[in-house]
Image (cartoon, rainbow, N blue to C red; front, side):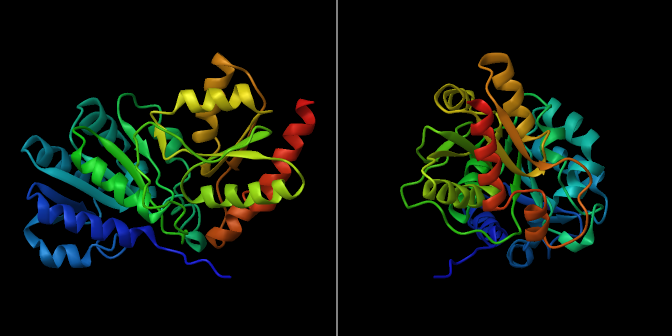
Length: 312
């Protein structure tokens, strides 16, 4: 039976439009990214609340800071690679250090641009941005979570970075799901080993848990929509209660993997294996690139088995 996949950019765009109808402070600031951000309908409905600065990412973040200082709630919407790399100084100084009420939305993150290669991959963003203190770095895993994260970001008074996935993902949550900032979600219980994933890799971790269960290994699956702040309580519980933690991300292993490794090394040492990118990602489809680094269901399950063997 085929599983329906969703482009979370559709959810993002619909949610932003709904928010703008409810609150006239909501604005979109873009860098010639109306199409890739799926904000064409938003621009038509709210032309005066759509600011297109052109291909000028540093200026884009500065403009958003000014709008926030004027009482607006700007959502900066751009490809994750260009937003975080080109405008890092402005993100640091104008947004996070200034505690500006700016929402940074990185579209098509990770390796979603696939064949466009390393210039368009955004695999460093978690590693860069998690070092900045006092804000939120978020990566929703499904359409429902994307909607709730966007709504939460709009209501939150302060800076936020969120990834909006381009790769198709299934809906993994029911109607009772509620996003909580800084909290992990235990999607599957298990006490043998922990699979900790974020964003589009959560469904791959779930598939790996299915494979492990066939062999009698019961994996705990943690979804971490919040990279900053990290849910230390959930991570340390996994370190205490399972043989170790396998992290999975569509990013460099210095991101979620690095954050978890640092936490457990200081507070409760346990085996950690990190699945992610360790070099510039090459060209190829996003699915192939993830499989290539071992982030397939089979690859994740294999790393989990190796961790358990080494922990004995």
